[in-house]
Length: 72
Image 1 (cartoon, rainbow, N blue to C red):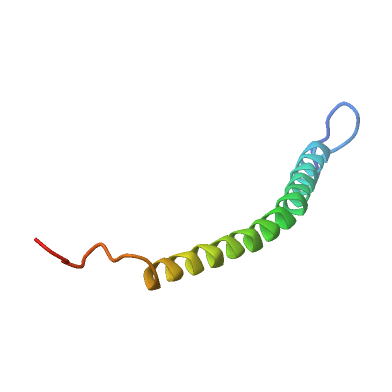
Image 2: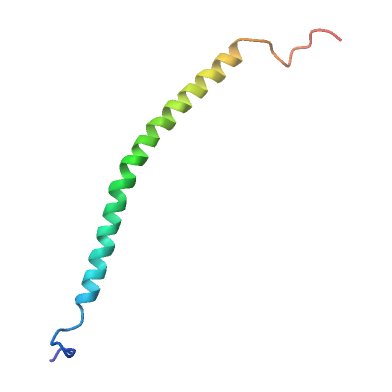
């Protein structure tokens, strides 16, 4: 059984290896950057949602009610 070789004596699979290794490196680098960013944005969004919920609760308990019929 023989393996086909090119003019330099290699099997020609070196470029595929480096291409796959480069893709894996780019994906890991993107996850390293995006991961902490999403983690920080999650807590900011959670804090904002808590403030919005508190404001809506306060607004529903105080102030004038729009649906009450006072006079005609």
